[in-house]
Image (cartoon, rainbow, N blue to C red; front, side, top):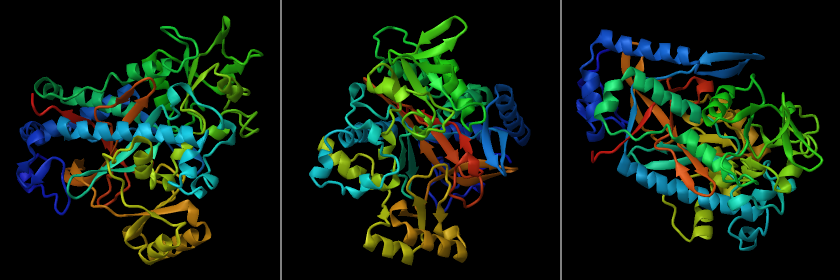
Length: 482
């Protein structure tokens, strides 16, 4: 298992640490030199220390399988990913640009709908969107921001260039694992943080609190903020409790909140009702308020939408923000940026075929063995087809699905995703990975220094989701000038 970089060959892919056997990339050299100094026993010891820390810190995620909820320890690889500060400054500009334009788009959609009148985007994108909420028409939230917290998935291609794979604007998750990855890595390699200029990520909970406070209806230094969770059986419950604790906010379920006759939201406490100013909701729109959405929901708060519409409570993310989360909408984001900001996109999209368009659909059906096909509104890696790795039967089944409901599917080429060295049993092997940075938008915009790196632990796999067998790494943004 010893780190002999001369024996490590990432070909034919772009490796983020090793340019070619025995030749680490300059920003990664301090890390690779250090790893090379460890013998097998020390490597095993560091790996065991990471596993022990994950158990001790209670870092877990929930997998739904065969009708059961199974808590599993967070899958973590001890070899960090390294990105230069110079590269990251460009990514940050691109993400700020993208989220500014997307929030302008959402606000337009629920108000003037000028982008349709100007024929920049066809109206079918809205009419057939599962995430458009009629109940939000006519509302403009504070600062014109709907998607306050976004997790945008990035990939690097065979040349090392960053592309946006998708935007997660509804209830994005994973930031707690980004923070915990850093804590575990500090335990495993404390000496590296003393000698390397690695940008910090631990200010995120403070930035999140400040962003939430900026949408409070009552100006005050410490508004009452609550994190609304579906409960302990939700797959992201670890994150809900983690963020509430780090912010000093209340962790609540729907039954803990009530909307009063004054259309304000109150939290039940042992001392009576206490007003809540801002709710960071981790519940999907349709379960948020049974008076307005799903009447059978036991997770939400009756009257919550009424309180929000009257400006008596801040909601993040705002209901209806998912209208820009549709993968069909993703294909139009470059045009959205040009329309609202009069700028060229800093970060490119992955080329995307819309199956609702006859010409695109014909191409997709003829090239299913080359493409990745995704449903428009699924997440977590579910419901997708990776054409080159699929069976003939699976491709035939997807062809039928596409023909039955073409609006619900998009397709993209299978990029030569970048790889990074990963511990796989007793070997060090290249594994594909992506990156989910988190963007906060309120009165100002903050982008995390890096994000959640997810790794496809199965050899040759492009599926990085933890629910689908993926793992994770710490992400280092390194100031190469220090």
